[in-house]
Structure formats: structure tokens, C-alpha cells
Image (cartoon, rainbow, N blue to C red; front, side):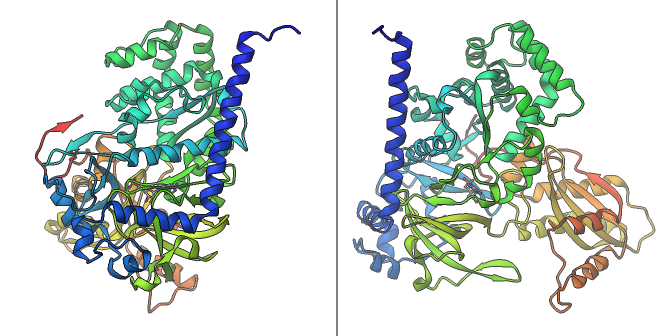
Length: 609
Ligand code: AMP
């Protein structure tokens, strides 16, 4: 028998390894979901015994108990506001075991805010491995539905964000920045599933333009090898397409000549890109021809013809981007693989090729101890029941079709912490429930990772409306919506004003109003405007007088009760937006970006980029 050529043997061996790893991962999922209740009890006991001596648990008198009954009886269900005094002490340099017996390695900055600033989530070294474990399960699951993805590359647009230091010297940064900068990511051994078109140097480049440009250039150069494309959230992937729309002539020029645009100055990025980039006239001509066509419909499948799906989160507020993604990809499957946060990585989608509206996430019982506060709907709005301790259910006690607010106890020192997400039980994998992501509590407006609630919006509008008083004018009513029909999307406010003074209000006053609202919004919004450029200038649309009465008439015609009617401070329903738009008399945009600096406003310490 003739000997098989070496590369065929290597290929067979490689395929064998991949398939063994995949089988192991699936077996692991099978095992922990089958024993979800036992695993959860073990996780809680582990967390409580590791941290038996921490100040927080002692304060509530847990006294070293590790059983669920005592834990549930003595420990309160809390929000960030309850945790903040402890977090502040850690941030200010108190190294005693306050929340966790293991040293806090850094803070993860959540996109959820408190008092206008990002929430700080303490984390410990070993959590990195837990996050890594969840990542390692994603592709074995996808492989069951789309085999062969190990034979090509993934074009994922991944970015780091700026980081700051707390007064006590701990780094504070987003969880993904922490992950991409870790050795687990940077020094990962070759794995066909983490074989990205973007070299590490391009992902780790702190300058967002250089990072995006170089990642796009590498993605284009390797277009035929690309089997899947994506970003973390849908908004990020759309931003990448928008970037291509703007910069394709420069990118084509580089591909034609094998050079890199001089604006890319980071030497490590240049070096890494040059290892991939070779002059290729044919490819440059092809990209140029496709990009200069009037329609960009299906541009993803045209430029990256072997792409099987787009890996992006389109659940929650990101669902607003589905039509745009469908347009650019000619309806490629949109795959949501995981559900995670700065507090904890929660779980994964075991049926990744399903329709976005059907996505459910299976919480992995080993990640943390999960509990659930039942949610009731009041006027359509989800309201968690008062935290009667008895009502907080365990993972395996939730009921099909019910909505719950997620509460977590983590290895890193959060105990019965309300994450703020509302989930609905959609089914079960063995004993582990699978949840639809319903919404984040109290989010009125969101474009990217920003989350603005009605109270913040109300305060911001109040500050802005002060600009009207010199003109004897006042704001009578307002509402808002997140307009994602443009890239980047923006907040739009409809204002109805009344004016008794005769002086016409100059446009600059309304522009100042726009800017004042932006200045008053939280730091995640302002970072999106200034640093990430993922949010466009805020717009105020003045509507003719009587418009909000018409809005009420419309609501009443649809069955709302006149006694209970309140002007919605945020609208999503297309006919209402159409009605409002039909009454617009003038519109104004924020003339510049609001102020934003990394870190929190009370810290005046060094900033690392
Ligand atoms: P952050 O704390 O900034 O990491 O944001 C975490 C939050 O993002 C979660 O609590 C959710 O509200 C949201 N999120 C994360 N993953 C998903 C997902 N797959 N679908 C919908 N929302 C998600």
C-alpha cells in the first residue's frame, strides 16, 4: 500500500484531535446540565467555603456556613448601590478580604452605570480561566451544525478599549480588553477555531482607527479563507462595514501595492500586517469593482464568498440591527453564541443556527451560583417582585414560560447580586433551563453598549430645557427614540415647546440643548460618542404644537386608558415614530462631541492607554 503523503497524515491527525476536543466539550455540557442541581450546590458551597472569612459574609452572620438554606436566609439580594461602598474601599486601596478571600486582580468596567459612571466589578485571576472555558465550548457546539469551520479562518473585528487605574492602583477596564490582553488569549496555542484573520497586534492596538483599518485590511487580503465573520455585538460589525464604505479606496490601494497607509503608524501593527499583505492587483480590482457598485446589498457575501454565517449578538436591544445585517449579508444566518457580562460569563446557545427571535441561552451551572427573582408585568413593563427571600428560585426550579430577573453569586465576590437582566424560560437542556434574553431592566435608549434609562434622560432634558428660559419658552412634552437607520445610530428627541416671548429662538440655542443633553448623559454614552464613534450626534426635532395630544389620541384609539395615559419617554413602535416625524417643523444636531475621559470622574490618577 503506498504511504499516505505526510500532509494527509497530519490532516487526519489534526481532524482527529479537533473531533476529540469537540466530543469532550459536548460531553462536559451534557454532564453539567444533567446534574445542574448538584453542580449548583457544589458551586455555592465552594464559593462560600473559599470566602468564609470575608468581611461581607461575616457582616451578615453567615459564620462559615456553606449550605444553601442558611445562605438564602441571611444574605440579602442586592444591587450595585448596596455593593458600592465595598467596591469604593477596594478601589481606594483597601486590600483586606472585603468581598473575596483571593486578591482582587482588577476591576471590570461594566457598560451598566451608576451615578453616570461605569459600574466596577471586582474580579480575580482564576475567573479568566472560567471565561476561557466558556469560550472553548462555543465552537464544538457550532461544529455540530456547520462542520468544517476548522478548515478556514474567522474574520472577527475585536477591539480593546482604554483603561484607567483606581486610586489604589488596580486596573479598571472592560472585560474583553482584559481578556484580549491576557496571556490566555495572546499566547493561545494554535487552534483552528481561534484562527483569526486579525493578527493579535491589530486587535491589541489602542488606536481605534489603526486597529479597525489593519483588521479590515487583513480580512480583505485573506478573503477566500474566511468562513465566518463577526464581532461581539451587531453594532460593532455594522461599524466595520461602515468603515469599509468610507475607506475602501485606501484599502484597495494598499492591497494593490502591498504597502500600508502611512496613517498606520504603530510599528507592531505594520510589522504584523506586512507578514500577511502581498501586492495583489487582481484582488484590489475585484474589491474596487464590488465596492464601487451603487448597491451594497450582499456586500459581505460578495467580498467574502465562503462565509457561512455572521457571529454577532443580535438579542436584546441589538435586534434593531437585524434588518441592516440581513441587507449587507443577503440574509446569512445570524449566530448568537453566548451570553456574558462583566459580573460573570453566564452561558451559551446550544442551537446556534436558530432564528434570532428564538435564541435561548443555557446557563452553565459551573460558572456561578444562579438565582431568579420572578418578574410580573405591570402595564407591559417587567417588575421584579419585592425581594422576599423565599421567592428567589434556584436554577432548576424555574418554570417554563416565566420571566425572571437574574441574580448571581460569583467566585469573585458578588453575593446574590441583581444583574438587571430579565430572562424568560424557553426550554431545558437536561435539568438546566434555557433562557430567552428579554431585556435589560430600565433601558430606554441604546445604540451600542450605552444604556440610558428614563431617569437619566429626564435629568438631561431638564438641564437642556434651561436654555429656553431666556426666550420665555418652555418644553411642554418630549419623547425619544434610538434611530439606527443611519450608521452610526443616534438618539433622537421630539420636543414640543411653547413660547410666550416674541424673540425667535436661534438655532444655536437648540444645538446647545443637544450638547447639554449629551454632556448630562452617562460616561458610556459619552465614550461611544467621543472615543468609539459608535454613536452619532444627538438630534432634537421640534414638533408642531398639539403633536403630543395627537400621540395620546393615537394611544387611546389603540385601547390605552385615559386615566392611566402617560407620555412615553421613549418610543419604538414604527407608526408612532412616523406620526411624530410627520409633525416635525425643524431639527438640530449636537454641534460637537461631549466631554469624556477614561476612568471615573472622581479619580484624578494617571490614565494608561
Ligand atoms: P457588560 O456588563 O458591559 O459586560 O454588559 C453585560 C450585559 O450585556 C448583560 O448583562 C446583558 O444585559 C447584555 N448582554 C450580554 N450578552 C448578551 C446577549 N447574548 N444578548 C443580549 N444581551 C446581552
